[in-house]
Image (tube, rainbow, N blue to C red; front, side, top):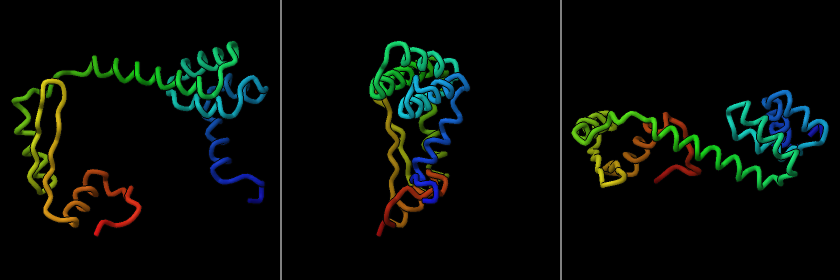
Length: 149
């Protein structure tokens, strides 16, 4: 409040400092807006950030357009990662995986595979049981607004 900005606005401005120096300069000089810079933070690779920032400045892309570009890049990266993923989880291992999950969660677990995708079913007996399982899966982080009861 002393600087006349909200905490989230200051946090977003500070996050811009994690951008590559070249991109920070583009924001400082006005070639990119804060919104453009914030959108670029969705990328991890500095070279990709710089290339996209240069494209934004050259083609005068909107923040929405840059967000879409970032999404496309992330999707390509995710799909490339999936293609390279080792096929170590074979259907024969599903019962073993289900048993290990059951032991860890202390409830019955089933691993079900269809032709193209799979599903994990976790059985629970009460809301208290569900809260305990949720806590185990999330590492104790509470993402719930209100306690379940």
